Image (cartoon, rainbow, N blue to C red; front, side, top):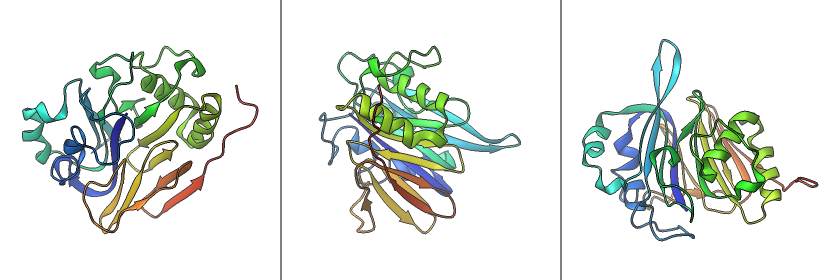
Length: 237
């Protein structure tokens, strides 16, 4: 339904993560290799990165409802954008969901950037006025923000129990932490000497990529990478 990528490490250009790799998000927007649902991701794209300032890590975003391959201006600017923490996504909209920039990840609460790869029945999500869009991913993001990212694993397990058909691959970052859930779709991890990449699918054919097992939470900090199994909750609505 979408493809996304997260980075935590040294300052690198956005272009080096998204546009330059032979199978990066640019290519995944029209020819993903591991996508199980949908053929391409032409319903928008978004790049979020953290800017170190006097106030600390500040999230910045650039989003569009157009296909990534058609945005010449982004291609010219991306090599000049550098950050130590990035969340990027290309979107394949679920049937019935709006196609608009506000429905495109990453979403934010002013501190975190969050992307959702998957689908969820909006009926199992609480009503909220803080969602950036009426699409399922935006409402899911608002729900996660309201409950707090420290509870991400529990929130995903609860929602996954309430909607057994949901696919709930979430990727979130706050400048110093990178969190991800694997629930019904693919996620791979690349440990580089200068940082860590989490991605829906590898952006190249390097043998160092590892697949994350389904129903797991991944936490990346500058010190370590931790994987924790997620279990469906009992008695959830």
